[in-house]
Length: 381
Image 1 (cartoon, one colour):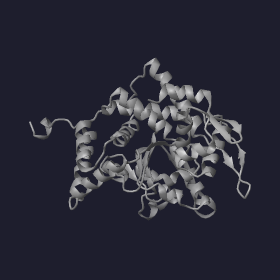
Image 2 (spheres, helix red, strand yellow):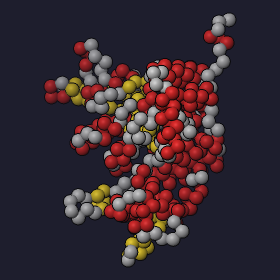
Image 3 (cartoon, one colour):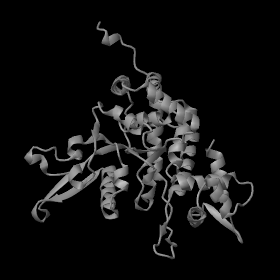
Image 4 (cartoon, helix red, strand yellow):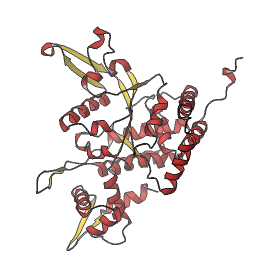
């Protein structure tokens, strides 16, 4: 019997311990959701696309880089049609990320923020390509006059990292594909402890990265994921449906006009439930398989669902839900630490979507819609 054959299996607790030794991580939720997304994309069902959102230097990239040695991982650095699918195989190239990954792989985008900073026309094209990848079918005409058609069919999961600059890109009206996890805001104590751990790691960063990579690789080598999703109880199914309904309504977008008289021009019908429901169901299974307990699993699913709305919209909703009376615009702005014009814009969007109500004109007063109060109280701890 070899030493390797008697090595104890690497558990989630082992992974947590290594990360907490090398980072200040009071909330391990982001790590667990990343690991669960890998498992969710290994099982039968729809792909899960996770977007980690947080400030620079918040360990987002360091976390996803631990997936580098997994067989299914393909890293995307250039988000263009040619970068995803090209005819370069004839010249010794890979043919793009999709052909390199094959029929089933996990796409890792370490800096999705660059897409948000692209010119609007380029950004729209990139988002359209990524939607095709999510849907499992990409076609591209190449050659003189588009005489040759390249095709990819398959299942591509995705994990990407971005700063809150991604909130400036309205993806809701183009068919949202992402489940987002926003890193919790750090208070003064957290920032100091983060710095304290970083000082202790000076000169050892490469060693610490190797430790994290090794423990995550070992964790997945020991993990046996079922081909089919674990069954949900009837109560869990109902809970998931209500959560997906609440989240899709709250993350739906409106269309604003430009110019001096900026106003809402269109209120599209809210996003329907099935796509987000499918991703949350897959993610729920992944969390269960890696060993996350039921209470924590539902906390993370709820957070992932509601983190789909922008951070500013969430602040405005929280202010309305916390108010004991119908607050004025200035009151909401003060509680959210926003200019009144910004707060009013978000409040107007919420009213247009039926999430809030305008109850007074002099001054303007607002309240959360009754259905929102009921569902929020039922689902959010």
